[in-house]
Image: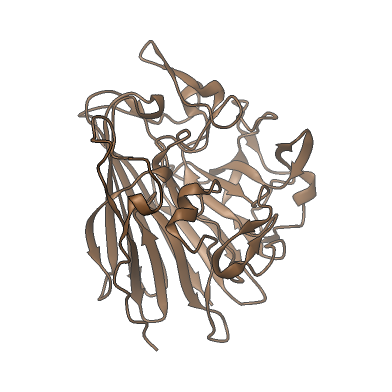
Length: 372
């Protein structure tokens, strides 16, 4: 049965927080509207909010025809405002980590907001996942349901140089296919740009348990090893002979206790949180990953045009109260965040993330193909 699209649920920002996120020079009393927008194509639907350009749900059938929501998230916008897990968000201006929250560009030192101990993570304390985006176009149904969102990032926001215009379009481009198109234009200064889509996937259904039994295949022969704070060492190493070798379909949990995903209170947290170097032309749309949940029969195939993909297994999820009363725990989902390499601004040997005015825009395309 076709699902009727719901009208956007509009909320005053004042209802979820008392802070204006309009940018430099904006009136502190300014109010912006936050909405939840549904895209639907038969029994396939995706919901997006312009708070953080966030994907809040992806619903499609399992092998028995039962509909299920396969992304982690919250029931209310207020919970997204106050949450710290980046559920479904578009993160930037620079996704992943920047060592010591600083970098040098064209001879000038820039200091960022350190929000991951001494490092900057996902754009800082108030990156693109924590601002209101403007809805530029919204078509809920038809042949190509889509929504286009825009954010204007001001010069100096979270310490980054230059004004930046950012757009993202979410589109149901074919049956059971979600396309994500991102682009960003530097307006007046050179700046690093590295956007990532941070959805947490559980193909068995959000809150259904851990994903350790899912099979994962990454089309990546190399990875970028990291130090104890998850900052790349600068080395690009082969995955062959390591627990990071996921070139053949492998259970997510098969080697998970052989890899360190950081630490908490002095204790090692086990799990994947690693940037892989995707095989092939780094600027071409190519297959990045394939995931399958045997119990539900659902599958996900990811294609993208970025040099890297961060594979994360929800290592820090713990007692998070999510949608429909579900509680999310460790390994309750996985993330596949296509991206430029972490800390590339401090590693000249990594692919550059610098975007300069008048010299072309940043572009990042992703295609999620779902099956059951």
